[in-house]
Structures are given as C-alpha cells and as structure tokens.
Amino acid sequence: MILELQHISHAFGLQPVLHDVSFGVDAGETVGLLGRNGAGKTTLLRIATLLLRPDSGQVLFDGHPMGPADLAAIGYLPEERGLYRRMRVGEQAMYLMQLKGLSRRDAEAALRRWFDRLGMGDWWDSPTSRLSKGMQQRLQLVVSVAHNPRLLILDEPFSGFDDDAAAMLRRELKALADSGTAILLSTHNRQASDELCNKTIQL
Image 1 (tube, rainbow, N blue to C red):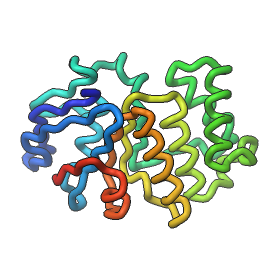
Image 2 (cartoon, rainbow, N blue to C red):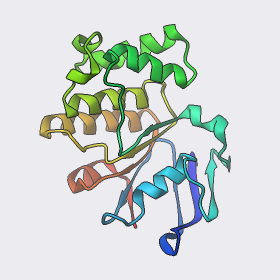
Image 3 (cartoon, rainbow, N blue to C red):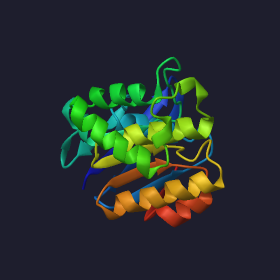
C-alpha cells in the first residue's frame, strides 16, 4: 500500500472535523473523497502531505510512518493555488520543480514534455500574470506530476476548468493511474468521481 491513513482524528479547537478515518491508496488506484463543504476533505489531504498533524492516528507511506524524505515521491495540488505573477511561466515551473530536488536539466526536460502534452508549449516565455484561471490550473498540475510522483494528491483539481479541460484532466489522471501512480483526490465533480475512482470515501 502506497498511502495508509490509520484512525485519523482531528479537531479545530472544540470543533471536531475528522473522526477515526482509515483507508489506503495503492499503486494504480484512484480514491476519491466526497463530502459537503466543511466535512474535512482538505484537512485530511493536508494531513496526508504532512502539512498538518492529526490529533490522533498516523500516516504511512509504503508501509512506514511518513516523513519529510517521502515528500519527494508525492505530488500535491492544493485547493488554494498560488503563483508568482511577476515570473514567466517556464521560469516559475523550473523553480518549483527544482524545489522537488530535480536538476535543472532534468526539470526542464520533464516540464517541456508535459507542456507539450497539455498544449502549453507556446506559454513557456509568457508572464504568469497573462494566464487564465484554467491555464494557471494546468501549470500547477504540471508541476505536481512532472517529477513522476508515486503518489498524487489533488484537492478539487477540476476547479477553474471548462468541460474540454476537465475531459483532458480525466484522461491524464487515468493515464497516470494506468502507469501505476496512486491518486487521492477530493472533488465536487460527481461525473469525474464516478469515472475515475476505484472507490470513494464519504466524509
């Protein structure tokens, strides 16, 4: 099992958000999180990426307690996206990929492949400030997957996408799962959940 969440509970002050949540995500499997706003989906994803410590329970990666060294094998697309609007698109992508430990050469080669794959090749030298919301979403998706993570965690990945872009994203996520990537995502998009997910967790 690539990712295991064991008996996760968490509260903010006196307000409980998660109570004894347990499930796993294996290689090639896509697991969806469903629930109303405030149900704890984003909180759970933050716990799964070590951005937040649970009040109880543990997170395992490949059978051992997840630690900072495991983060290089994880791709994470948060719900709150943030880009440096004064940087050019390729420059920003390179910076974010090198933070993941890739050399400049490897980062550029991987990014160029994904830019071409998602129809973004002409945007490499454009200012980030010129990107539409959908193109910003594509850029952040690219930097989540270009380092070939074993585990991909996506928080509302379809937000900002029109129907054509959402269909493209579903195709790419299916391809990643078919190649062995473990995927955990939260979404309000029931069609995407039904089409992509091997199982869903109701929060």
